[in-house]
Image 1 (cartoon, rainbow over the protein chains, first blue to last red):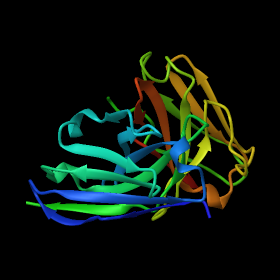
Image 2: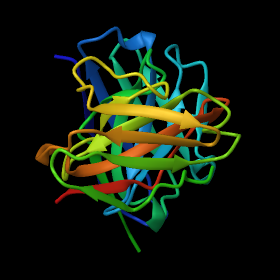
Image 3: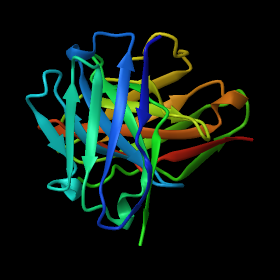
Length: 118
Length: 110
């Protein structure tokens, strides 16, 4: 099956760190840009970061630059999001998303929840 | 990186049409033909409905259509059905591999 499965979410204190993982299957993973998109409870979608298929380029939402790092391991068909210095406003459901040939976010995981306590 | 502007809600009776607008600037919606639309049912992940302004992925009914004029894109759902009740989001490329979403529109089928 073509799918993305996230893991690694949880409860963390403000200022703490968390690493999200996403395992891909069913498609030529290294051919695709991959992204993280988040959604705060009851709120809209927000693009967070993306990474090129070979990992050579990364881009970030301004508010997470310098705190979050997106990376990938094509041998393991996985993408990661290292989140440091977490803030209350980072609390969200984080989706792992494929950016497809359609120039759109065409495959979504089910999300992993990040809760930040003060 | 300001969010695109969508109306918070829209509604229509079964069989009717509803249109949702998505307003940006010349730096995003108006500057690129990379506008996409997503449908999200409660507790579910978003699903791609429209890409590159007007195109539908395989499996998406032709009741869903997209359009763009200037800095405003729109999604029209024709022949509304009960299962179309959901949140809808637009998204646009903003250059240099950055992206922005709209705030979302809740569609209610009356």
